[in-house]
Length: 292
Image (cartoon, rainbow, N blue to C red; front, side, top):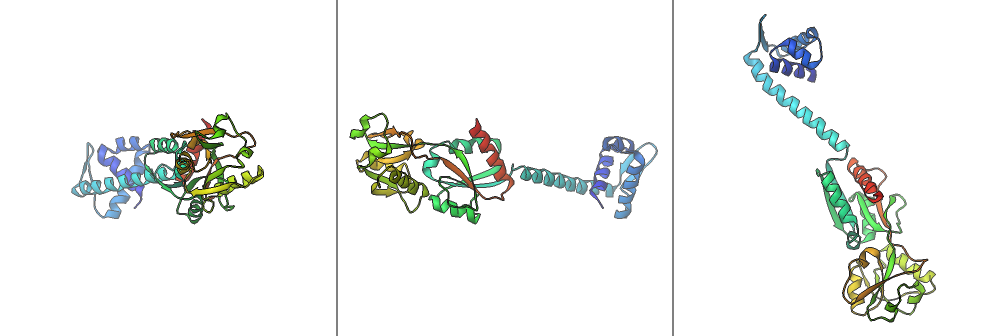
């Protein structure tokens, strides 16, 4: 028994006319009649009472119509669901990032994706950058949004959006009178810094200071960029922070841009080479989002 038998049977059962059913199915009447006869032969019972004027369902035909309709509905649902999965419209997407990255456009991107693909469950988890890289590598995370540089050559890294690095200073600081600063202007300052052991970005900022001619004097280290602002406001040091952090002002803190050459705080998407249709759909939506 094939699905064709069931579709032909349901058409005749609904039309109660072989001629009308054949027209509906786009086939000629003789092959349709042959398929129904084959089905009755397999079931070992007649499904229709045929006369010159009318076609009626037998009691067995009435019962089989319910089963056939349910089977075809399940097949149609399976086809639709499978097609949706193949298009990345259904499934689960696991993202990892840091709180400071969420201060930027990522939240808006996720909200847009959910409105366009509502059947995809998006799960966001915050974790330190090095743990994010490990999670993507292990397959427990689909895409990580983190600041470079990236230390996993076996993974794909793609620019999501660009950000610059500026300086957060106490508003009473002497350097706050300047409209912009060079990194070398901070050589004698005490720094509050991202935790070096958890972040390649923190080590990158440290290297930038060294390239500017000094090793930063780091008094405190924290996990998140926005945590630096509380320490700056308390007068515990100056901090190098991404643009998105600067946009969330805090009393007692001022921000100054850095003259070129200056560090960057670009956000990278990190993902595996082989990934699901949901990941492909999200990557496509992300590229379109930032192209706008």
